[in-house]
Image (cartoon, rainbow, N blue to C red):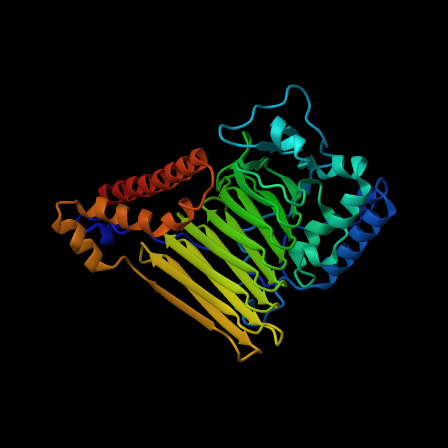
Length: 469
């Protein structure tokens, strides 16, 4: 972070020494085939076959299949050799179920290998909405579970880590909203994880019928036993698989604030039907190393997606974000924006690819990637790209920029009597506000703003202490 104190730059701490760089395929965590077989032995034949097929793909694939991005694969801070998955996590809450968060229609809470809550209000339950763990759904509605879990297209077949999650998942949750049901209040999904030496592999499936409408708030938090960056590491891998039928509308806000001793691999893939609308608002704050991939498939005519993702990093966190948006139907619309504000020796790789298929006549698509380096040691890389096979487009464009805080903005605020440090704070938090404003639950908005402000204040305090040393 840039400090307003004269001479602070010269007194800034030296960049931490990094471990030797590993090859792109050198992942220290290994999913054991015996574990996959042990889990599959107690499951229906179709699910066991799905796990085995995913495991075969996991073993055969490299970490990165896109040659444009292999340069930026960096797993050196992931020390996961001693990490083992949780065995036989619970499928239902034990004891008294937690209450609904204020303003929510439903709540699912998971903490490590336990289920803390699966609850819907009376009106939402009466409308036919299903909120259940995947283990519970398999027992209660095998037909729905088979349709959702057995869909090959629900996760990218060319991604090693996504297939690892599919083969080895040990916990999951499903939200099913029937056709025509329109929820006015969000459903909250909360994951608390980070137990040192443990891996939580999760699948979240969101299924909206024709004309349905819903909003989801996903919260990824540190569990009580989670360590910081100096302790033993934990692994969280999570998929979020979205199925939107014709005319469905879904808003998803995700707030990731895991402990800095946790490595996170996230995969989000959405199939968007005719006239359906999807809105992503993703905030990445915590984690030691975060590797995130979002795949949007605009298969239906007149379908649309809006995606905003922000990163706020400190110390030597690494965020590796990839976004693929594939336009297949006619007159589809995509609007994607990634922003990173980086303190200390943080690194962020923002990679995006818009693919316009020959069938995608009338596409309107934009991709923007912007990094704000708040320290001389910070590094942001932006790689937006287009692949266009249909010339009849309304728009196909991308934009990117990386740099420090705009000095003209600082001058404007300081000329109004605002101190240099407060001016920097206002500019950075304003830079990240687009995600906060899209969170569909007021209490979650307040939480995210408080987390962003606390992270800024902690960085400012660290810089002040370094300057005084």
